[in-house]
Image (tube, rainbow, N blue to C red):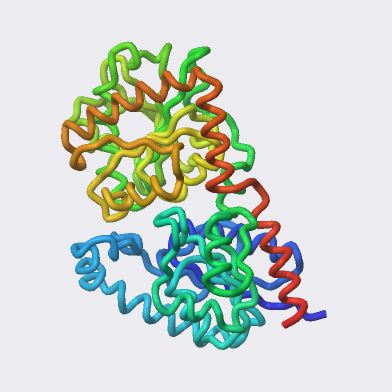
Amino acid sequence: MVSKRVLLISNGHGEDLSGSLIGQELVAHGAEVAALPLVGHGNAYRQTGIQVLGRTRTYSTGGLGYTSLAGRLTELLQGQVSYVLRRLALFLCQARHFDLVVVIGDVLPVVAAWLSCRPVVTYLVAYSSHYEGRLRLPWPCGWCLRSGRFQRVYSRDSLTATDLTAQLGRPVHFLGNPFLDRAREPAPPLQPLEPHCSPGARLLGLLPGSRLPEALRNLELMLKVLVRLPPSWQQQQRLELVAALVKDLHRELVGRCAAPLGWTLQGDRLERGPLVLHLVWGGFSAVVQQSDLLLSMTGTAAEQAVGLGKPVLQLVGHGPQFTVSFAEAQRRLLGSSLACSDGEPGSEDSLAGTAELATGLLTALADPAFSERCRRNGHERIGGPGGAARMAREIHAVLSDV
């Protein structure tokens, strides 16, 4: 029996992660799977052994240039627009060799999938009715989704599923979010903390992001927040600190960033007075799982944290991703588990206010009712585990009919 072929198309690093998890499950069902990421190298696919089509590139905006005029200009100068157009042309050329297209993303891959004239399944991870109460899909996304070419449409939360079912006049289902599955995979204890961890100490995890150079600027802002914590919370006996870093944010780069701020690099940790920040590379899941509170300037990782019932403290930066508008939209999306200080990015009001909020949240963790509210909110906004497996089962059923 010849296996059915599935082509995944996604347009973002978080979308790649969800796509790779869905792809793994489809392979387990006997499908032949390939991926075509529109942004970056598609490392999430490569790490799971899924073939990535074509030559890939990455850009400084990480595909988020649309969030600002400067970002759009940067993308034009770097050639990202022409690159995406070439990737879309490759998709249209390759799609005819596949039995089914699976979209993970937003309007761009949705339109591309419609143009391919192939049967399509869509996971609209980029859109939520929590943003505005009623989702306004960009044209012509809604028109495409009403087409008979789209066999199934999945949303990222139940509110959106109900909203889009009414708007599109067709069933839209919420089966969970695959990216939460990765966050729930058992992670080993954070080794740098093992010899130093103080019984009863809270763990504050730092998530500065994955895109350089923004992640480095974000880490700098976070270091400034840490030194503004009250002296009683700067003691290791009460608060442990760990930062989850991507490999491109290497040790020497971190040391050069931190030195002007009074921090000293000692092996895999930064030290400044009583503060000790442990550095972990490639340990996002472990940091998210094991931290009591997350200081975050991320998209998907913050969503994973909320899904696990963790409180998240946002720190607004200069972008291109984690800007004031992005943080505000994320708070609407993720609800009461998120907190954010007022003030312009990098200002004293923002930095000191974030440190004050951190103190309040760390204190609130002693209240079981607070933790239970975070858990309930996470389940409401993100859903439970097993989203990738549920989607793959339904996609497999679609494959049987195409």
